[in-house]
Image 1: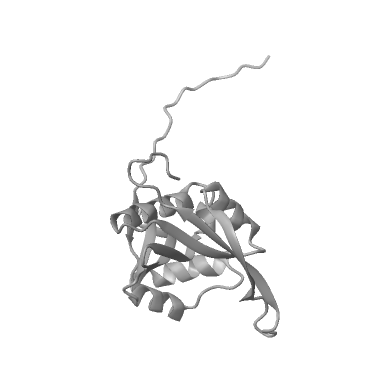
Image 2: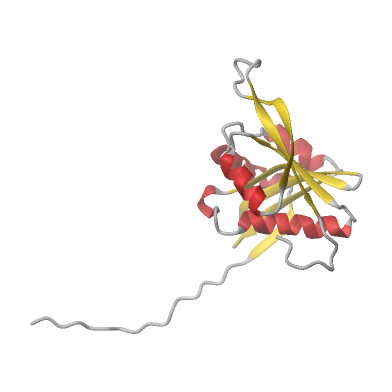
Length: 176
C-alpha cells in the first residue's frame, strides 16, 4: 500500500530590478564578454571605447539586479538613428531584454524628434533578422559584400541587409 503526501507551498516571488543606464567605460569588460559570446566577429575594446566617447552616439546598458546583461549603441544623424551594435548576454536571451532595449532607445529618440531607426545585419544572421522583423523592422536594401567573411581573405564578403523602422509619434500606442 502506498500513500502520497501533498504539501502546499506559496510560490516564491523573486524581485528583479531592471535599469537602463548610459554605457560607460566601466561596463566595457562586461560588454566585451557578452560581445565575444554572441558574435563570430566581435567588436574590439577600442571600438566600444570610441563609440562611447562619441557625443553623437546614444549608448545604453541594460542591468538586471546590478549585472550588465545587455547593451545598445546607436549613432544619431539628423532625423535618423543607426543601431551600430546590440547584444544580450546569451544566458538572458529570449526573455524580452532585446525588445526592452529597443523600446528604451525609441523613447529616447522620440524626445529628440528622431523619426526612423536604421541598421545593418549580416545576411547569414537569421536569428537577428527574425528578431528585427518581429519588432517591426522592414528590409529596405542589400549591401553586397558589406561584411568581411574572413579576416585572412578580405576579398570574401558577406552581404548586409539594411533594415528600417519608423518611429511613430507618442500618440500611437503599442510600439514594440
